[in-house]
Length: 234
Length: 191
Ligand SMILES: Nc1ncnc2c1ncn2[C@@H]1O[C@H](COP(=O)(O)OP(=O)(O)OP(=O)(O)O)[C@@H](O)[C@H]1O
Ligand SMILES: [Mg+2]
Image (cartoon, rainbow over all chains, first blue to last red; front, side, top):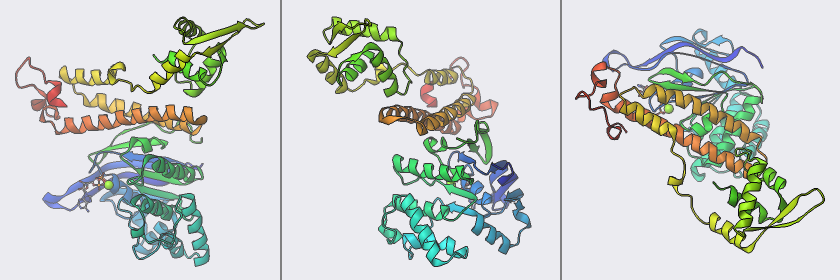
């Protein structure tokens, strides 16, 4: 386990809008996630959880402060370099899933790998493998032919395919019953133990408890945190 | 306490020695409920007095095998089919503590935050224990503890949100003072 963080947020602030309408979504947040570490972010609605995740993944830029991914300060990257870094290193599960409706489950999962430049054949077999791992038995179905829980699992498979070093998951267990939600966490935990850094947003204590560290956000600030991991490996 | 019925349930699987009952009881509950051997023998002699178990002959080592009787089976089935009343469970100290903090005019939010972090740590430990759990009975017990800790977390989140929305517990000193001296905020209004 390396102690260089895979992602580092240093005194990060994000204000949405300006003037009287300005909303400070994050206020001076500092957070490191190292390889092999699963960090859960909890907090009430509107406390800045999704904002934090978007900043950590370079989907949004901070108003002040710096985000560093794999040693690269994001503010120093061109749009092109940023896109390449996101594609290669980061896997996302969005709160609203964002599956492409005109692609099948398998094609949705293949897409990021094809963007990585992997050949279609290999991308297809990787997709089949991870979809099987996550319990999707009908990879040829389109998103609107799947249940909410199945769609959720496809979105997770898409984030995990390829060797992503940083996995960002915003409420990945939203539409799942508890045994299936536990399966998702088991899968994230496995990726983590294999060396990925995982940042998980959840409002469910049950899933946050799989993390090495739980951070509580309130009004855009870190209010509390459970201690650093007792033992990093288990 | 359900030691009586727990022992009957184990005996319904066949005759057993006292020490076997103790280790099986602990294995099934994941050792969250440790029994000492004295408790087991006291309970067995009461069960014998009530005609729910029957002891066999002592063997060479002085050990006695216990067998469940028909009345014992009936008792076990009655127990399994009767829901547990919520009022039979002990009062929760945390609930009392929070209610008292509010009643005493103290700020309950630090209590909530400290508890939430502590309960989350406990929940993390339970989740780790689950990974090493052996057998469905142990998993079921851990699951129950996980759901209870989870419910407590949700309740704490709820309390925090409700208190934040209530003007009387806002951060300003003006608002924390009760309107009439001597009439502290009633828990009813706060929760
Ligand atoms: N694009 C935006 N423009 C203006 N305000 C925004 C924007 N995105 C988020 N906000 C505001 O920033 C704050 C934090 O939002 P964020 O989405 O990070 O919350 P959250 O913790 O993820 O909430 P939830 O649990 O409801 O998903 C909120 O007050 C929100 O209204
Ligand atoms: Mg959100």
